[in-house]
Image 1 (tube, rainbow, N blue to C red):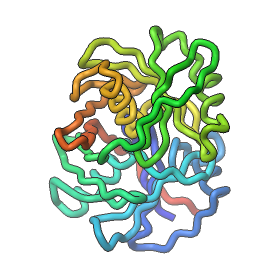
Image 2 (image 1 turned 90 degrees about the horizontal axis):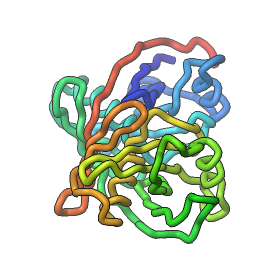
Image 3 (image 1 turned 90 degrees about the vertical axis):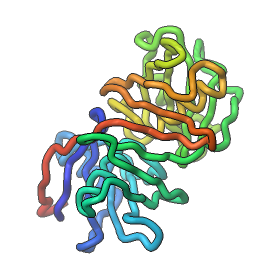
Length: 257
């Protein structure tokens, strides 16, 4: 099975292309492939397939083999592959119940229209100093906490607690955010089924939505993640444009799983 290793700001992916060859990969296989000691190593597995309504269909799977309905950083990587294959500057990706439109904005730079944030709520959840979060649906669930000092957050301990909270029967991603100013936010992410990641594109969109909802930032904001910056802009129609880099690491072949 041929694959490509890519990343967006250190959020890394093993990408398989099922458009030309059949793939038979179980959740256990995915967990092994994602393992950084026994496999290739990645945060998520991505599988490309044919689409009747877009240039490509993308499926995302967490490092534990569970399916993820959305991934912004992987979507940028997929878009760059497809645009290069087609020799175009724009493309569309069918993802779960959304079709994402994407375009090149520079060399190895891609903008993805992630659609509208849904179901922004403020659930009554708390743990110690972590309270008054904002829940956001970006096709996958996110829980956003605003903190005074992001470097003091125990992302693993607190993130794991809320990921598995009974409020979220399918678990949730958890973001911690420090407001620098109206145009800049600092984000750290606990990704469900993965753990701490260097970056999270759908999480950045959730963070921007939550901050705009609270009146804490402008409609266009730069979000600094552990792996680097993403830009998120909310359009007049309420759609979220997420922009950032993509990187190719290597191509390879798996003989056995």
